Amino acid sequence: MSKKLAVIQFPGSNCEYETVYAANQFGFDAEIIPWNCSEDLFMSFDVYILPGGFSFQDRVRAGAVSAKLPVMSYLEKVCDEGRPILGICNGCQILSESGLVPDISDSHKIEIALAPNTKNNDSFGFMCEWVFVKVDNPGANVFTRSFNSNDVIPIPINHGEGRFIFSSDIDPSTLPVTTLKYCNSKGEVIESYPTNPNGTSYNIAAISNKKGNVLAIMPHPERASFLHQIPHSIDSEWSLKKQAKFKSGYTTTSGPWEKLFTSVKESLESCV
Amino acid sequence: MRIKLYTYLKNTDLHAISALEAIQHYMGYTDVVTLKRHLTWTFDLDCNDKKLSQQIERIVSDTYYIVNPNKQSYYVNFLPKPTISNDQSCVALEVEKDFKEGESEISEKIFEKTGIKLNKLKQSLVWEVVVNSKNRDYDTIKNDLNNSITNTSSRGQGLLVNSFYETHQFLDEKALYQTL
Image 1 (tube, rainbow over the protein chains, first blue to last red):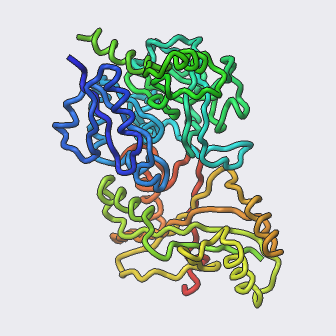
Image 2 (cartoon, one colour; image 1 turned 180 degrees about the vertical axis):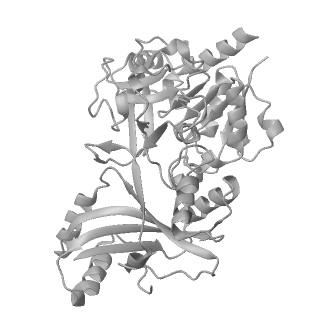
Image 3 (cartoon, rainbow over the protein chains, first blue to last red; image 1 turned 60 degrees about the vertical axis):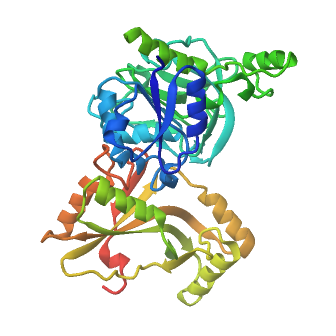
């Protein structure tokens, strides 16, 4: 029986339908639930995704108002129970404003922020690009277990506030968590633009919690889950695969981020 | 001369409404009664008092860069004192980001269009918060606000300031309101 996956729709979410589509294609029984749903409905799922978008129009700060909603107290409960939670883009911002990642202190205190993009300490505005990431410590998170730390994975970013900043009492280089880091097409993690597109600390594009059941990711894996979503123009084996595949006729085939969904699916099935 | 231009939305400010909603209903700080938001520009302008309003009107109407007159209006240097009851206090909080927000580019564009040079242009956000005083003195109220709705430290505490990349200060009442 398929595991039940909830995509939480906040006022202003705009990636919930494609996220549900991807999850369903990769073997989940996924549905959208509203931010003001009952606690009973909320608690009836195995996996939770906070999708991308502009919840509450990014008022005050991206994710700041959504993080205060009652639904986030339900999410804290399922987080503490160890159920998998994925926050994509705006969902990532909400998770960081809620203190669910990296949660090194196990207290849901806020330890990171997602600040506006910068270049040379000046505002750099909204970014819409294809970039590459590598997974550091993939085995420690339910969403990344199927990845290899050598994988160079293409993925799109679409955000204005995606620059990870850490609390001064945290050293990001020694955290016991999984991170995704921006790299170039050769897999080199270079701290300057354009490899690091938004000035983020330590090139971090995503970060998990210490327990390994939550992942907050700024880029959009649901937009790179199928081969047809990968652009021809990027310097990637996935682009070459797409071109080869499509020469023999259009087919929908899995893309680089299928592994995100299969990782969590296999983790849940192995627990049964 | 140092100028502070407090801009505000002429119609509904949804940012302020959502912030107040979150503070009162989701975080439970019902002492906060109203919240106003002013996107504020601070700059040095080389002109005398007589020409000040004329210069600012020109910057606004000829460029739209720091004020969009279709939806925003502004106060120069002082805010009007809000009407509050005896058991209420008004506290103003200024929030600044620790990185530049394109101010030098904006200043250059304004100079190109008007010939008026805005030196040391800096953007900030001023929140005017009206709270129920409950016999607290002004310093106690500021301290309570610091611990409740300003510094964001957890889901239940803080909203208006993210201290990872923002700094804040409470503004002096006498400097803020001309009518005092």
